[in-house]
Image 1: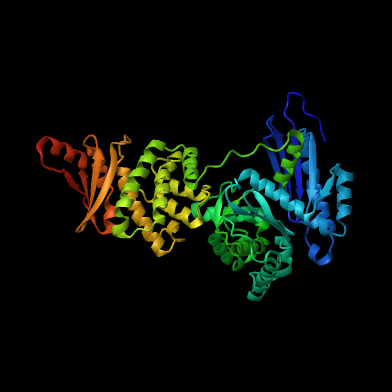
Image 2 (image 1 turned 30 degrees about the horizontal axis):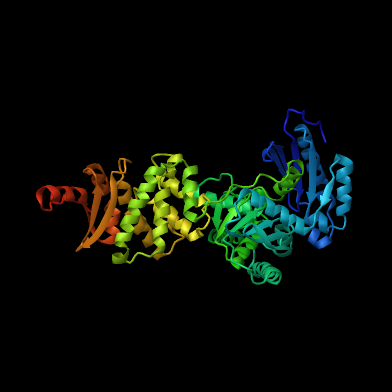
Length: 542
């Protein structure tokens, strides 16, 4: 297995996952507390399961290619002087009549012992990886791993597995059965869709619960995430931890199945080597998301090999260090996310309080929905997180950070609403032609404009970040909304900035804002025995 590390060095381990479509290696160094860091990763797309569904055997060419990749990975592991290397094989080797022959050759040529694992173990490894990278305890979850030969579906509640299903719905298997035309003809698409629907219906039936989130691993999920990133931002970054929606998957699937293979190979974000099997894989994702009712899909780039690595670490040091205790409610998750982005917590907390004052004062008069209150608070707490990336475009960066961030307890639609309200806390008005608003219906788009109008004023009322304005009371007049501000000193700067930022509010509520320093009223009343409010009327043009 290569030279052992010296006593002063941390142990090093390597794990290899021999799948139907690709073979993957991860090399890691184990820390004294049982955590570990990845040193290197390698992948070889050898399509080991090519033709297996028709012949029941691994082809000579596929085995030759796979053995070459295994030799290269063994050399990499030896170069890192790993103390232990483990290799597992899943669907293709498990089902092939000559799978044992392949394993013997791997041992003879490269001294790599391959363990063929059962579907249940495959699913548990995928779940272990998801549980390490995502906090599953406060919510229900569907963990899905899609390989070339099978799809593993794990339903869990409170971090505990409820059901495991291994489905013969791998991307390579389904492609060879049904993707028989280029682009896919309607009859071939119907056959593909019908098989997926039938297998899922028979295996899962009515799910025991509607998962709060779907966590997906495997090349299908990572490629879909990279394509979504290209659509959203014009570039791809690491898909690990990214969030995509079921609607985005459906939209991509429609494009993919209507696009010829050669054009698919050039689609931004799509690995050309996966272009021929992506339609089948995406069809499985789309159907499972619809069947389970999962609108939010989080991407786990690690998957089964990471779960295997965890089991190896556990044998050395006991179970991997557990995740810290989760926040008690979903707004605490928002605060935790803001903290991770190094946001100005004092300012954002104060803006959230002022925004809440305004919302509560206007809710009955303008029939604002109850659900809008927490959307507004979350957006206020997160509206400045974009400073992590850039000052000038921080409102746009805030949108992307929120969309890609993990906000447990919020639905995918709520995340979109929060992100859009934060996006429009400055500069451009919301417009239906904007891509970030396209996923919302008209009522939701109108709510975004209302809440963003409130947030702009609340943000202006803390212009100096000194929390000079202590509270706000709102009252409606004919064609006007009066904002009465409590402050110990004349908040001239805050009134000026709120007035400057009131144009969206004026447009969406059809009312001109007026700002009154009520602190000055009470002081004059005490001195002079009469009321003398100072009123600044905001111009609609801002």
